[in-house]
Length: 264
Image (cartoon, rainbow, N blue to C red; front, side):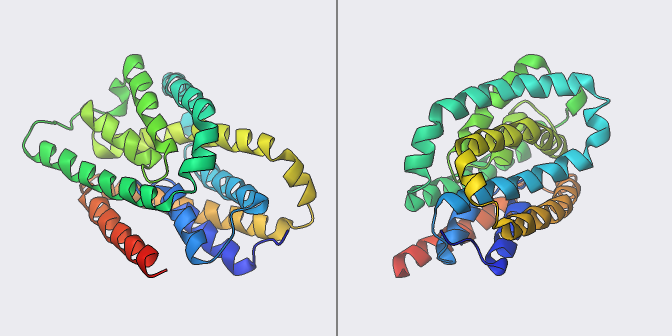
């Protein structure tokens, strides 16, 4: 089975690093990019996705290494939030991999719909119906459990794990940047758990592709570096801006994807 070229690995690594922690759905972007580049969905590309996701999550671990070993209350709440996500992931693993990953039009509809949700939430904030005043220090255990449950919706391509977490926390009145920070923190067990589960499922593939490690390594390193930059930019952006930019981005990319499917 043919592996990826260096350019394909580079592009996919950049896409993963840029989109994993922004509210734009990295899964949707990777699937769409693979379609555009005519990259077949096979055992090797699935393994490659695990590697680039691992690179992205390593960027979070590196960025928040001090908090991980010092803020034990936040670690406990993160672990609690991960439980419903893990249960949903295990329960929906088959349908998501075999049905939703294959249906590009449905992913585009979800992708665009989430943009409308962003605008709706920002409208409610402007009207004062949602007040964003809370910080992560006031996060309660039952809130973490609810947020983790809503994060489970992001298993459907197009939703965005970061987007689901940020909207859920905005409902509880958390500032956007604080919500983004928790979405990064919650990504650690979520993505690591998903990667470990996928790697276990693909363990035979890993052995068979051990001599094609170069594209995997390139994608891992590129994803790590790009994710580091994306995380820091996103936090800074949300301190002074709304989610409207990402809503309009979703509309633009969604419409372009619809046009591409129509002309394909």
